Image (tube, rainbow, N blue to C red; front, side, top):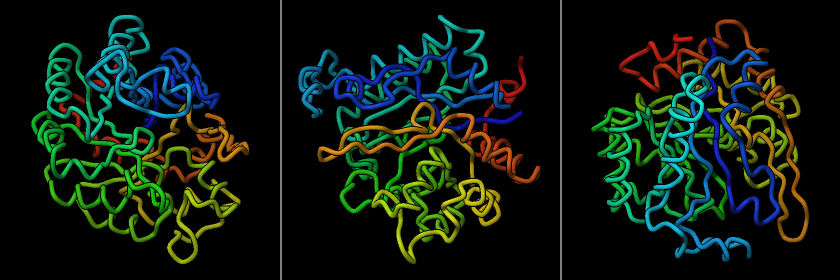
Length: 324
């Protein structure tokens, strides 16, 4: 059994309205494609844009409050959980749903709704993508601390989009590590291999309550090979041949055997959008992402695709990972 620890479900209106790709994924499509490539379980969470943002403003490429919903992700979390537990329970039983949250806006109302949802539909972790919604992940240390209290109360981990880009003031990996250091009783995963920042990866290795995932691995390797500013550069970058994504994953697995979790980031293993009038096209497939995992030695593959994710999840009922 192998676990994909990073997948999005639903529709992202911001990406759809602004012409970016991808913008949607449904549960049957994810499971059907993943099974074809040897994966048996999927951690899933909603897309990032949510209905608390004004839809008309989204079409102009901005996110502003004033949408159809007051509480961020109240609609999206329930919609995904109903898809898993009611619409497609045959596929849903193969997933481990996480609820997504905004660390800064309406924290008390979000936390209250999450507690209500958890009583009706079990979920097994929390997810944050603060960059796209321009919310400070550092708010978890102040007004958003209610989410850390919720994670501790439910004994669920938190998976957070991480960045090292200088213009990304919302999701810096160093900030996430400070949050993790402040609550050793809560487990954290820093997504996207900390953008290959060696110091951050080493700090993940040192902290007992942190892991990292390699989601969207191939396009991040492409970004590194092309020296794009979304990944660490120069001496700050984990040393590897980024022209060979399988070799990079193998090097990460050898350096951090108990910390690396494999995830595809489906459907965001590709990213195609206009930036400053030019098209940025970073393309991969689920098949190519899974091939990097399967290229690992048997020991490293089991660690990255099973052991480490199980340790991060720390499920009370591991039958969830074995039921057919």
